[in-house]
Length: 328
Image (cartoon, rainbow, N blue to C red; front, side, top):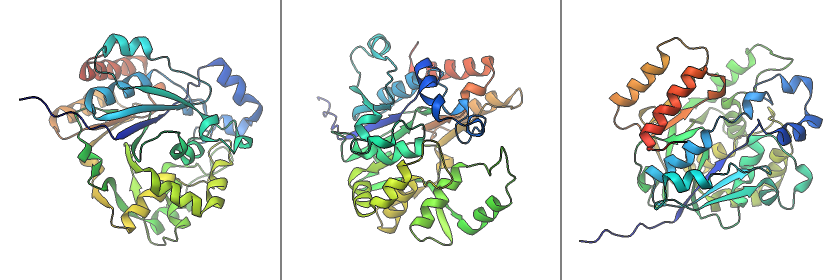
């Protein structure tokens, strides 16, 4: 019996930057204040460093999500040069990869470039030419670590929303008592979600996203920004991350949840989050044991791997390489 052909109607999009690139360092310098440059939440070096995560991110999609139609990598006049790597590791099973420059997704709004701000870039992702209606958005430190199905992201016309509801009031109060650092209150991951929820007039709760691939329906975001051009402009107008910005995908999830078009699943059951920074000696081994013990974990995020020790970084990359059956 012949196998049914894979129906490819879902794209993957990865945001990527190589902050080690001398041209990138030169480009950012005229806009970089001393305060922003030493603030990791705004424009500290860790926000832009690349340690080769993009190779493993792309590999994980090809290895574990063969139904993906195309992989778009969004960059700023850069190229990770994956050709030889993909030819070596996936000579027959590769998925087409296209590099998309910021100038393409900011077309018509070039006056806001250059931009060094993931929230601004994410606001424009839906403007990629040829992007499919259904796509999955990755950061380059997101990895698939077991096979996934289309239904892990899209259940018919509904999306799978990995996350949970949190108290907006409580987290807003926690922000108010947050200590000032480098002359400002640190701009955290939750702050962008809270800002988004408030834009939609949510007063009591917001949907907490995790560091996990986001399934997206392009038409929903396109329609929202066509009706709210002021929010689009305000979100792309910041060179660096700002407390005034909102998380586009929080807006999107709230719209889908309100319309009854999202199925909530707890991200904690499916996501292995690793942040190997200033941890104990057994932190990595404990995390990898969680993966071995929990067979339904499919997603992984390794945050701030550039700040890990060389030993921990090599351990994690070797682990990913073994799972994905690739070598650099």
